[in-house]
Amino acid sequence: MTLNDFYAFAASHHSQVVFYFALVPFAALLAGFMERREGHLPPWNYLYSAMLYLVAIPAVFSVGLTAYRWLFERSSIMEADLVLQIVPVISLILTVLFIRRQVSLRALPGFGRLSGLVLLIAAGLILLWGIDRTRIILFSQLPMQYLVAVFLLLLIVLRYGFKRVVG
Image 1 (cartoon, rainbow, N blue to C red):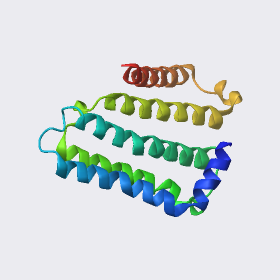
Image 2 (cartoon, rainbow, N blue to C red):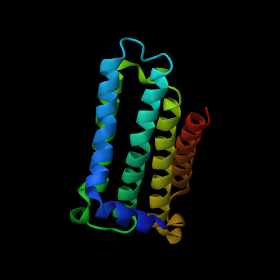
Image 3 (cartoon, one colour):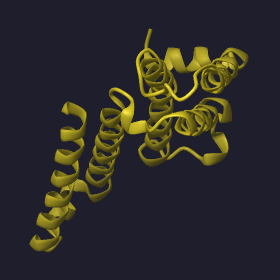
């Protein structure tokens, strides 16, 4: 199964996608009612962390795929599949809001690495987009100090993101 096959399969089963992305925030809300001030202790912190990862990974994938399609394939925003591109992000936002009311996100295992992963993916996309847009010929027309400044800035962002992922 290719990535295109998976995307086509998900696009043809919108009801299951919406059900999944509605179930996780609902479970976070329900878990918040079930536990009382114990969200930072096991097993609640692992449950909250798992719920965050269940929606964050697809949401990051959705945002990355959307950015790729708009920046590199130059597809129109009017061709966007709202269920596959917007619903995961809304589900992530709701899940984070429900969980943050119960426990500090810093108390959850692995959550700092997730934000580092998002930063690393964003920096990689920016780097690739910059290379795609500038073409190799334009590098010779840029003043050297701008080229070095852009390279150092991207290197710092990538290193910071990598440190957050590795720990």
